[in-house]
Length: 319
Image (cartoon, rainbow, N blue to C red; front, side, top):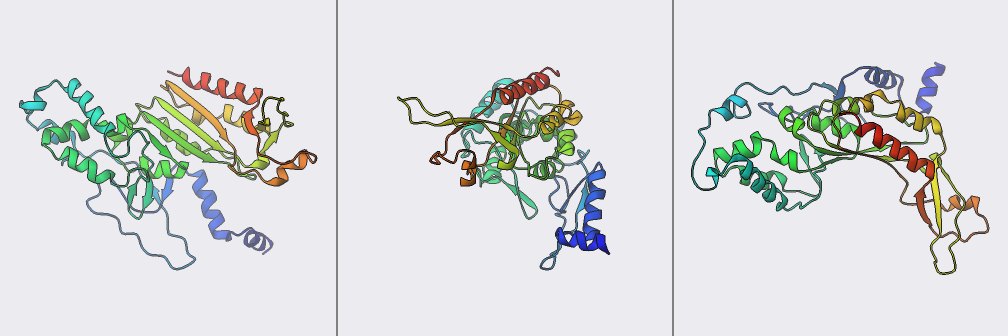
C-alpha cells in the first residue's frame, strides 16, 4: 500500500511503472502502431479515451521484400533506357540528381522527421512527398536511379529531436534507405534527475552502414552546470563573458564509458556538444549579487573543450 501511494505521489501508477521498467530492460523499441514502409495497409490507430495512454507495441525492424516495386528483383527487371539524359553514365546522372536535390524547396535544411498520425513529415519541407514523387515519376529508370539508389537519403542530412523519434523513423523505413544515410544529428535532453544515455538509439546507429557524420547535441538544464565568475569586459568592450562545465563529472565519465556509443564505427566527423538553456533564470545571478544581470557570452571551459576533443578523437578513430 505504501509503495502504491508513493507511486501515485510521483505521478505514475504502479502498473505503468512496472511496464516502463520492463520495456527499459527489453532490447526492443516500443512505439505507437502506425507507419511501416512495406505494410499493404496502414495499421489503424485506435482512439483512446481522455486521459489514457495509447497501447505501445514492439517495433520490429523492417525486412526488405523479395517481390513488388520495392524489391531488388523488380529494379533489376527494368530495361535500361538509352535516350536523352538516360544515355549518360550512372555516375554522371548521380551528380545531376544531387544538384536536383539541392534545388528542392527545403534547400540545404536537414530533413527533420516528425510523427503525425500514421505518417512522417518535416517542418522545413512540408511538401516533401509531393516534390519527390513528381521527380521519380518521370520514368521507371529515374525511379530506379533515384529511389533504388536511395539518393535522397545519401545527399540529405537528417535531424532528430529525440532518440525515440530516431528509432520510430529508422525502424520503419526501407533498410536500403536507412543504410544510405550519411549524416545524422541527434538531440538528447538531460533533466536534473535523469542523465540516461539512449543506448537503444546508439545501438541502432551502429547498424547504419553508411553513416559518416554524427552530431550529438545534449541539452542540459541550468542545474547541471557550473559557471565561472563573470569576466568583466575591458575598457574597449561591453561584452561580459563566462565559462561553463558540467557540475557532475560522473556524467562525463558515463559518456566516455558508453559502449553502445563506442560501437558506432566508420565516422569521418563526430561532434558532441552540450547545449545550455536559451534563457537563464535571474536566480542565476545569485553568484554575483553586486553585478547587474545582463546575459553574458557563455563559452565552454577548457576542461569541457578538452572533453569535446577527446570524444571526437575516440569516435573518429574507429574505422
